[in-house]
Image 1 (cartoon, rainbow, N blue to C red):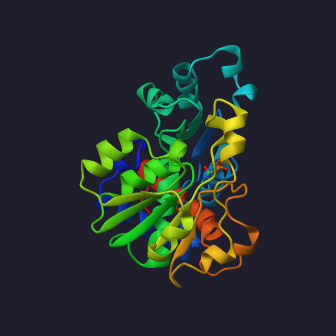
Image 2 (image 1 turned 90 degrees about the vertical axis):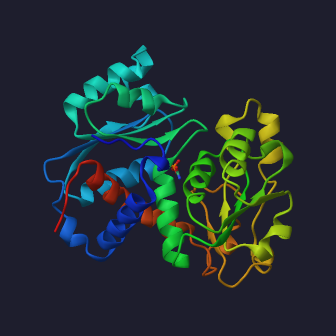
Length: 306
Ligand code: CP
């Protein structure tokens, strides 16, 4: 039995296969419409979500399966003090596969140690968000036609943004990847990511504060919101939240084939005037999230469709 805790749980070859499967699902949805008949997905979300929960549910429904779950800790027995390990023992009796989001780093890992069904980490604190990374990789591969030899700009809250941490882990396995880390001083990528991932693997990167300075050299710009829920005080959040606003003027500094991704939700960091730019890929990205989660469910359940 396999779980997905981190993008590194799949080899590069397995990731390629998964992305190929997602592309085939996009082209031939009818072929997969009954692949999960009789199967159930449980979505255990101890933290708010729109895309991740609903796209997992859409994925299972598109495969012919059913869904169950809760969308907040308050509406589950976690509010009475039940542990994650006890909850997952119960869920293993009710469902075939489970997607879990939790504010505590490592909670999905605890779940998989007590589970008899595959667990998908749907985001754990500021740590990892591997299914977002699968979505991001599929989007980059679709818009650029490759996952190697690129300069990737990561902009915004690089300290708390788990999507950024997961994406870096995944991209450093491809050749010719270079990062431009664009953040205010207080929201820099944590030392453990710079030293243990980038420096250790000799990945070229530079850190800049001004987005304008980075724009001309980027192949991909990955925007992120400032993670309000991870700040200890409101004052710091308010000071940081509008540090970056991508608008038409800044887009004018970028290459014609530089695409903008964002895991969403967006707050103010991308002006709505950018949405009509053909290089704005963030809504397409959300659609790819359904195909890639369909591919993931099939892979973890070891279901093959001819
Ligand atoms: N990208 C993402 O994780 O969005 P949600 O928080 O809405 O699931």
